[in-house]
Structure formats: structure tokens, C-alpha cells
Image 1 (cartoon, rainbow, N blue to C red):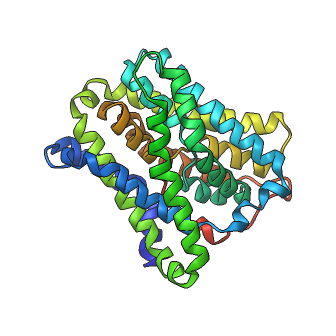
Image 2: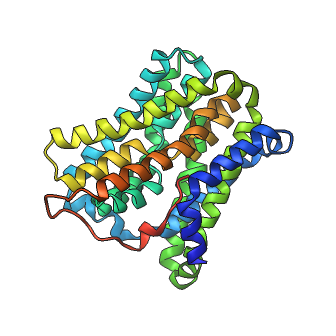
Length: 323
């Protein structure tokens, strides 16, 4: 099971890309899966919670500055960058809303693996993912309302309720299960990558099938927008870390955490609260950021870290799929 999970994690982008291509070619069946999207994300977030331990939050007291800097960068750079890129390229309002939703989503757990492979500060990466996920019910609705609330009728209260149901409750439930039934949870950990990848593949298939016409019409432009959003997040995240003089390993962690988002959550929220077309940026982002993250990790892994801030991998890093 562990070997299968590792293999699926390595080929995650290919699996998701294949799911999207099949849905585009044969949209009739997966278009009916849309109501299941929030439930699939809840299962994935439960799995994420099961990989967490109280020690993951210890960094808050040991190095609060780096953690606060990274989380602040994530919730400012990505939403504003998504909004800016969408308007720069003249995307329709519904797709612009999808770009903002991707930017306002918390970090995805695939980023933890990328940071480790990039010889970055893995502990900081895990802490950023955990804290941003817990803050998402409050910050994501506020950011979406501030940036697209005037152009589209989005309810902040409904967004808050959905994120609590899809993210907060399952993550806390998973964390409690890890504390109360550690042996049972340990037996399940090897299967979590398979569950996550399968869930995200179904989410992407449902989104693509439900908006196949829109994707065929603006596909190339939307891909450019997503690529610029992701690469801009990597670059600006690293620049913030460098400007604030954090160690190089921490800069790499902040860069990856800012650039890689929980696109599965963004797709679920867009599908429920805006429309299937608004979930297209998240579906494309889900594929692309795993490709770009892998390439970035490969490049950084060959460049030495000139400080002692690199943190060894821990058990939670084996989580290989983002939502």
C-alpha cells in the first residue's frame, strides 16, 4: 500500500490530467458527479487531519515570525495576484472569481512534499499548511467578498459555512482520531495518498465535464492565467522571504506554500457558490502546480542551502496529494 501511495503521488499530475481529458472527451457521465464534490473534499480533509499531530503546531511558539510572515504572504499575494492576472487577461467575471477563489484557498499538503524535496524548511511548510487551513473559514470568505463580491452575488456567510463543513470539521475530526485511536489511524496512513488522488481526479473530472464548453472556448487563455498565477506566487513568496531576511530554507518553504494552493477546495467552493465554470481555474491549477512544484523541487534540490535551517522529513511529509 505504501509503494502504491508513493507511485500515485509521483504520477499525481498525470492521473489528474488524464481524468480531465477523459471528462472533456466524454462529459455525459462525470457531469452528474458535481453534487459529490464537497463530500469528496471532506473525505480528503479528514485524511489530512489524520496526518496531523500537536507537534505540527509547536512551530508557532518556537518561530512565530517565519510562520506569521508565510501565512500573511499566502493570504495576500495569491488572492491579489489571481485578481490581477484575471483582469490583465480580460477573463470573464465568473472565471475571475475562480482565480480569486484559488488564491484565497489555504495551502495544499502536496506542498509539504515539494518543500522537503527542495531541501527547504519542512517543519515550517507543515505548520503553514495547518495554520492556513484552520484560518481559511474566516479569511477565504472575506477575501472573496472584497475582491469579487461586487461583480458576482457571492454570500460570505454561505462560504464560511461551506468551509467549516468541508475543511474545519473534517480536519479537527481527523486530528482527534489520531489522538484517540493512534494505532488504527497509523494503519490507514498508507492508503491516504490513494484516496486523495482518486478524490481530486473525480473532482477535476466533474468540473471539466460540467464546463466543457467554456473550457474549449477560453482554454488556452485560462491555462496562461493559471501558469502566471502559480509562477508569480512562487517568485513573490521567495521575494518576501528574502526581503525579510529569513534563512534560505525558510524562503523556499514560503515560496512553495504561497505558490501551491488547495485547489480541490477552491473547485468545490466555486462549484457550489458560483458555478461549474468558476471551478475551471482550480481544476487546471490542480494539474499545473504539481508539475511546476516538482520541477522547482528538482532545481532547488541540486542547489546547496547555505544555512542550517533545513529540517528533516517527518512522518506527515508522506502526504502526497493536494486537494
